[in-house]
Image (tube, rainbow, N blue to C red; front, top):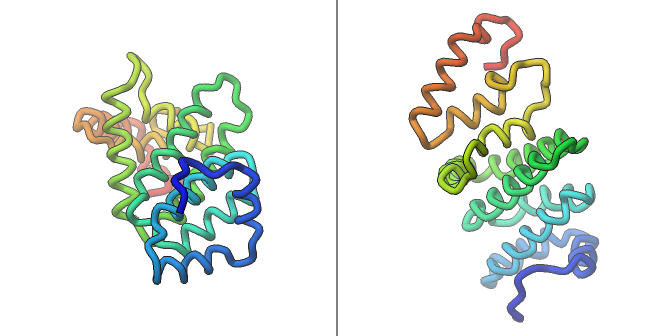
Length: 193
């Protein structure tokens, strides 16, 4: 019942270690309005899961169990914000791990809330392009994080294509389609449609 902005790590770890805590919260959410608690709990798990694999596993389980529809945008904002921070760190050896971490979170959200996920990503890209520093393209930074295959040129990589085609600006979408057409990537048998 107290107003808090975030969970400290120790209480978060205690709650995480309670067996079937997500199930307990699921039952409580059907009888009481605990949405703010769930939002705070999930957001704290997102922050903690960047460095703790057990938190990451628990976060995925929690998102699959609890209703998170009303704060998908906040979760996406936190995840993509962490990805951008990771991409800006020069010589970051964990940059691919950050992308894999984010992909797993987005896959869990997409199972129940695919429309909300897509809208949240679009809104994040739109707002970050407006607020971006000159020459600092958010979609390019995110492409660095999400690309697992470094063999492809970065302008036609899977993540760059995905972020560019889902970009709010028509010019960026058009440029992405032009790059795809020029690259002949779709003619290769190994291309993943």
